[in-house]
Image (cartoon, rainbow over all chains, first blue to last red):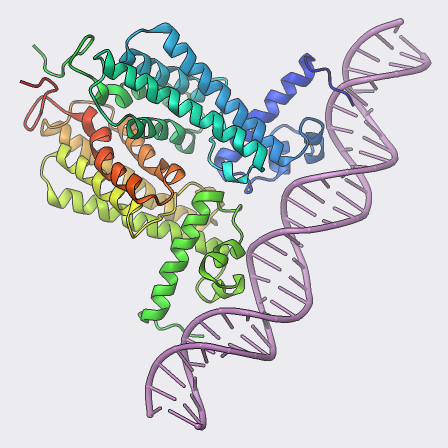
Length: 206
Length: 206
DNA sequence: ATTAAATTTTAATGCCAATTAAAATAATGC
DNA sequence: GCATTATTTTAATTGGCATTAAAATTTAAT
């Protein structure tokens, strides 16, 4: 009854459950998926899930926490691996998209935060805002260093995040398409950011 | 019991209901919103809704039909009002975004198509695909006429549509923010498309 | 005003899904 | 092999929600 926090078996099954849940939630929404749906994907019974989470609300909560973690990881790697704002933005998109369509996916879309109970909702909302703000700061830094053209960073951030968040709505695991996404999205989502300063490619071929 | 198809009262109430439903669905998802939730927004009882729709599934179906209509309208206006692909793409974003954040909104996000029954699902899926294809053709035409730089039109379309579809997740009716969106999104979402041919602004100022 | 039609409410009904407790099975250490 | 712990299942219990039919109220036309 007491689960060792680091037990391999328990932790592994936990992740399997979170991924199965993420797939279901992305497809049919939070309330639209029953615990039986999630369990079926794992060859389990609905009741078995209660060994890993207190209740259904906590299952979504954990999914959203995991989503926030992975997003933050992509962001952290991006700011570490490049200096110019533009390059960081591009890297962030690349890393996040790779996670979403790769082996660590599916990642739950944080699309039903209002369904969480107050404490969890506030926590997830805070994480979400922190992520958005981090990206906006990244964009602002890019404008300062001249690699990104002046723009409304709030709206630009919302646009880029939206395009990423929407991916699970139309990507359902096709490997070839996954490769297309990883190749195209970083370019598509950042091509409009280019500034005239350092690192600017211009847009006019010589 | 028999509703005159064009009756002002009936039609008006019907639209009010669809908008209230769209708001609820966007916020809490299809299964997450009860008919009582929708009715409460209108000062009605849940049972009253059955005078306007056969059942809950048809309520979503109608919301999605309306969403498809409005999207198609934005697309049609865009292709009518401009010639170059780039200008059409920009106009489409402008029109669609104006509808979403304007008085005709909220518009339901088509995010739970799998919850529809087969016939409705197929119809809505077809409309959705048609819309995506229309946009991809528009992009391809822009590449041909030189106003849009060569790109993966499928992925570019997915990215732009995703950014638009995600708007209702963070926009909740604030008028000032609505203006920001209308001003920024057409630019943000199409700035990366510019080609080197006719109508190209380049990216280098002087 | 009176009547008929249109709209909404009240008051059931039944099902599905979340949750829980106890029992059964599987895994692990000795 | 035995005993203890971890994991899953079976078998209730529960409440909410979609749905329906009949009754009540409102609206509109004459």
